[in-house]
Image (cartoon, rainbow, N blue to C red):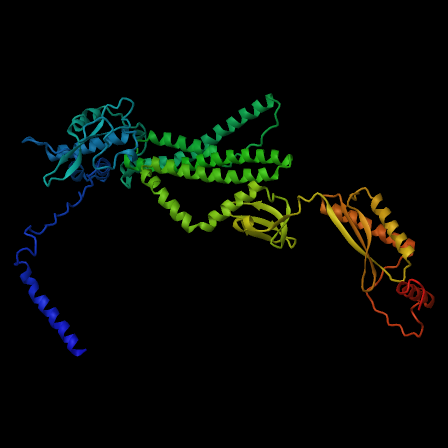
Length: 559
């Protein structure tokens, strides 16, 4: 073993020593030079790789009064005559003012693609930021894509746009409100925005809420008057101080219109617009869920009045599914509205669905189990049933589980996957109840006496109107250990369990009264020991039986 190890080590050293010579032996290696990795291009520090980064970066730099950085977003001037730096900085300040006062379009929809939008009808190296500067759109924001000194293709604000900036700036009409408020609130800034604008935004909140509440109350009065003319019952309105979904939606729109007249910073309007979209999405989802709730409540009441409890449970399940679908749709629309690309999200739905299906097998099993329970109409809300030896009243059939109220008044939650495969006994669907009793009579009753008792009990069964005539029977069943057993068997025509118990109670009391009147004594499970010398066998009857046996053995009479 030692020699083998030394041989392996010597061979490894020889291979390692020959490796530098392999490059000099022809045919063993390729003559092509080794590939050289190209240096990666560093990203632009100003974020000008796409149109959105260009316009947002300019607004941020100009708003923070970093005009030397802001002018770097302008298209470079070619030629010898370049404008002075102070004129460029003044141009950046004027362009920011124009954007704050006149730009009404959402910046969330500006392209994030380095190539820009290729379906706008413009050359590939140009991008127009639309959305309107006022009604006439007299200053379109045009971006161009050029190479810088390092060969990077970046986006800039075009010189065609910049040449129009002084003319448009001179035509601006600044808010009259700034001339009437203290100069301190105009000059003092918080987060690069004047204090008076922050105060105005806060003051507009209660104004918008009060105006929206008045509009909603006026609409409620109009609806009540219309219902009164149509002789319809009046509807219960919301309290005056309660904020409903309609009030929220109208208040958000009013506040957005009021803030639009303030001339706030375009960058802050970008964030403010996102907040507005979120609030509108909440109000819209709130309104739709209220509508679905009202519709399903009306449909549920109609189905309940007609006894269609399974259909009512299906309506409740459909309502939950619709509300989940509405939530997903509103969330996707919201993400799309604030500038997120939902195409990638939708493309990943397939993978997400597969992962969700693998990770939530039990959840889907319970969901489809609940659907099978509802559509098969095995049980309904309000039914008394037994599920795998567990008895209770069905209170709810949900997407995940079915809830039973047990006789101990506890709430039992059974997963629908188990419900779909369990043995379910529904007591609510029972059309009649079985009454099966055993009456035990004493052995010392004569056969004629027993026959009379049986006839009397049969007459009781036949006279009762709630006893099914075809199924009723009273029979001497067997000789038991300590009694003569008589079976009373019949169906009581009651669907309600309490009514069945009352009928059975009256029937048993009448049978007891009959037994007392006929002198029949009910046997008790007891044992009695008798010590006597008397014979229990009648001697005369025994002799007659013995004679009959002998006669059967000798038919001719000979011994």
